Every structure is written in structure tokens, then in C-alpha cells.
Length: 394
Image 1 (cartoon, rainbow, N blue to C red):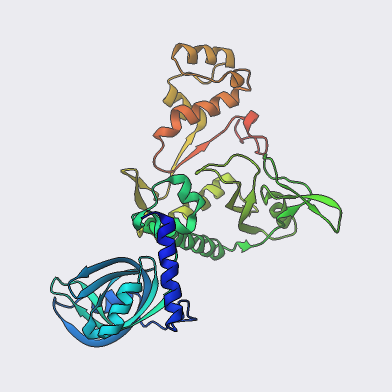
Image 2: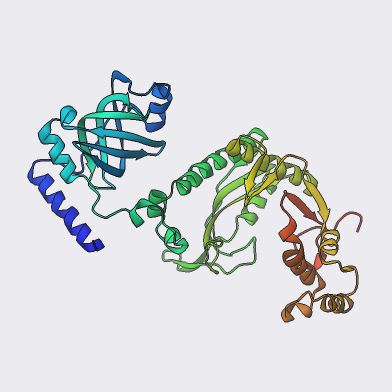
């Protein structure tokens, strides 16, 4: 059936519900258990067990199955799935017939009833009362089997979370990671701060800013591209350890890997150097992995990545020389000639120099693909490190 016809049919059901005196969008529903709590409390039951204990659960109907004079529904909440068992005996003949006719996939319902297990051992709730909490007027995307189009998933995030449990899990883990970051830094004496998002001069990074206009001041302002300059001022003011987790804005390309607005962490500490910041970074990220995965390693694209400290530290020139097989200490003309002989392409706009740009290109094209475990790449050339101090022994 075309989507517009499905929507029209659901709107007809909505009208009938209201005509019967049923509020299809009530104010609240008190539940006693989530799906996960129900499984934790009753997951040990043997098949075909009736507990006699009443519960109240709520969630979205993600599957409906008619089997003779009974109907099974899969109810999903944030914590998981629970099966609902609807029969004329438990609901009453009139209520059963009414709800079977008016329920659709995607509806939010509350159910009160007895906990039991089926003959196959499936934990279920025998519905004695069903309350419609929100009538869904649109069908679930692709019959709820998951949005597969990447662009649609990123444009319609609510549908993505609805259809793809793994996307919801990412959001939950993101919150856990942010909480872990804050706890880790707070325990080490860092102070969380907020710096201006509207700035008179965009600074702290090289990027095209978004421009807005302040009517009262009659001047242009910029959405920040980085909080760096304001955080450094706080160090000048005597706050020796500061950090900010906030949104940055860059008026540039957009893709599934690059967003014009994004959340970034910046942390600054007085009286230390890049060695101390590397130790801070590896400890912080290891703590986040432990919080999310329960161990200092996790699988990605079929490979196990180990985040245990200490991480590998390797000079940039050494890494690039190993990956490309070239003597990257040579002057730029000789290096380009060797790269040409080896068939390693270098874009024309980089061939004019500076040499550091070519080295950086070789890192991205030759070396990065083989870096799986966390690695600190050190000692970047000066001509691509304008804000860094010269290394002590170079």
C-alpha cells in the first residue's frame, strides 16, 4: 500500500479512537519495569510459568503477530524488547477486538498484566489492560528493518534512532564518554569552563567562520571556530588547568565525516609540555574505552585495537621513511624525484613546497593506513607547525 494511503488509514483510526472517547495522546503512564528490569527480575523462569505478579510496561510496538485467537506484540523501550500477549480472555472480548483493529506498528502503548513465560520460554506479559500512549500516523521506515541509506540516516536522525538500535547505542555511549571525560579531568584538578561562542575575531584555528550581526552593537560577530584563545587567557588569569567541551562552527564542507558544527574538547595545563599532554591524552582515552567496552581494547573493522598505556611514540620522518621507502631527509627536489621513480604521486600544488606539506601528504597517503593501535606521531616539520615550539634538541 502506498505511504499516503497508509497515513490516511491511520488518520481514520485516530478519528475513530477519538469518537470512542479514547485520548490517543494521554498525559502520562506509570510503569513498574523497563524491558531490561523485567528480564533481570524474571529471566530465570522456566518455560510455561505463570507468576501471578502484575507489572506495567510501556514502549513502541515494533511487531504484531496474529496466531488464531491471540496476538503477540513486540514492545521496544530504550532498554530492550518485551513480548506482549493479547487474548480475549485477559483483555475481554470487546477490548481485544477493538485493539487488534486499531493498533499499528509504531504505536506507543502502555500495558498492565501478568508476567509469564510461554511454552518456548519467552518472557511475556499477558495484557489485562492496554493504554494507547501515542498513535503513530506514519509507517515505520522500511518496515523498521533499519534505514540503509546513509544520507537519509544523517538527515533524519530521529528515524535513524527509531529504526537502528545500534545508532541509539552510539548516542548512549557518547553520553557515557562525555561523563568519563569530565570525571577524569575533574579528578586531576582541571576546571571546566565556558567561553564565548559569539566572538569579535575568529581565532584559534584556520577555518572559514560563520558570520552573524549583532543589531544592538551594530557590528558583525563570528561563531567560534575554536575556544583556544579564550582558554589561554584563563591560564594567564591564574587558572592553571582548564578545559571546555563545546560546539565549534566552521563554514566549510559537509559529509558523513565532517560537520559544520561539532563538539570538541580542548584542555590546557600550565607548567607542563607535550610529554605531559601525551600522558594526559592516552590516560583519558584509555579511561573512555574502559568505560564503554569494559576493557582497554575493542574490535574495529575486524581488528582488535589496544588502547592500553603507554602508546607508541614515533617521529614523523621515521614513520614516513618506513612507509614510503624513501629518504625523506633529502632536499625537496631530490625527494620529489625519488617519489616519482617509486610511483608515489604528489599533487602539483604540493610540489612547490614547503617540504613539510609533502611530508604530511606522505603521512596521510602512505603511513596512516597501517596505523591501527593508538600512536603519537612526533616532531613535525617547523614549516607546518606555526603554533608549536621548536624541539629542544633540534
